[in-house]
Length: 406
Ligand SMILES: *Cc1c(COP(=O)(O)O)cnc(C)c1O
Image 1 (cartoon, rainbow, N blue to C red):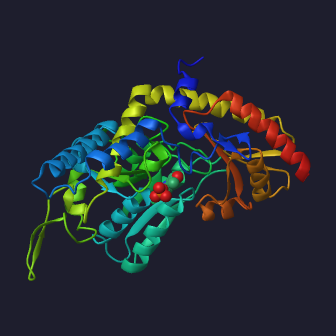
Image 2: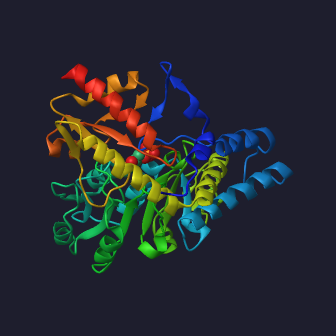
């Protein structure tokens, strides 16, 4: 089928051999966070053990080595998403902080009455920062609708983009529906009206190839912890032309050029947006994770996860009263579902007792769940280390849980 040696890959992830209530762990909560390969865990220990020193400051040996590693990591990230230059990569704490940065700084360029467009399928991270900015600056938030399959209504979106629209902010992949949005087409559509686009790539980068130049994205954001890297580190990619236009986000060390009590001048990109001591351990560990993925090949991962998605979808549909939430033809390995009248929380709780980790609830997309008129969903989401055998076991456990609850 697919030439990936899954047992070898699984051996790279120590946590996968953990037992849950004495049962093998079936980790299907990868859309919430992914597990870490040993090379990432080892890198973190190695850095703290042999190379810990604050960067961009010291003249001493360790500081210089740590600085070089941090900047090399920036280069690795730039290459991974094919950014034109490393200075277009800003290290943040995660997708949430990346979007807050853009919402805060970009809205400074807006005036009352300007419009920001988002969609019905956004994560809270790509809703609330815009609401706060809108409140502060008197902006209007416009919401593009989705259809019953969970696809974006492109025509409706196009209609919303007008001369007052200052920015479109949209998920690459929905964390609830699994829908992969046709963002290249959407970006071209927005650009035809001179509207820049921010992409929330939190659910995309670990699962499909991202080329920010080919997409022509103005901003692209993602989190380290969802791409086999550590928590607390994330990425904001921005075209240099846009990043230069934005005012700074936070003030402090690192982001300055010259400070007097009268006036401060700001540092150049990317440091202008990196106030304070950066997570120079997280950045290098993230680069280690990206190199791990690169070695396997993102195209292989995509193909394999698509196989898991298709197989799991088929097997789930064998279950009576199964209702899939999100049936787009273009999906990533995220399956949200409900069974009969069973509350998703009850199902998640029972599944846990069988060793299966799934997410239940509104998945940080409450407006979408409300719109669908459901109490939430059970969500199974896959990563490169999941297997067909795990899906078979999951279906068996799920049947048992359903029998108990129905
Ligand atoms: C997880 C997620 C986020 C938020 O990421 P954080 O790592 O919590 O900052 C934003 N958008 C989507 C689509 C996500 O899945």
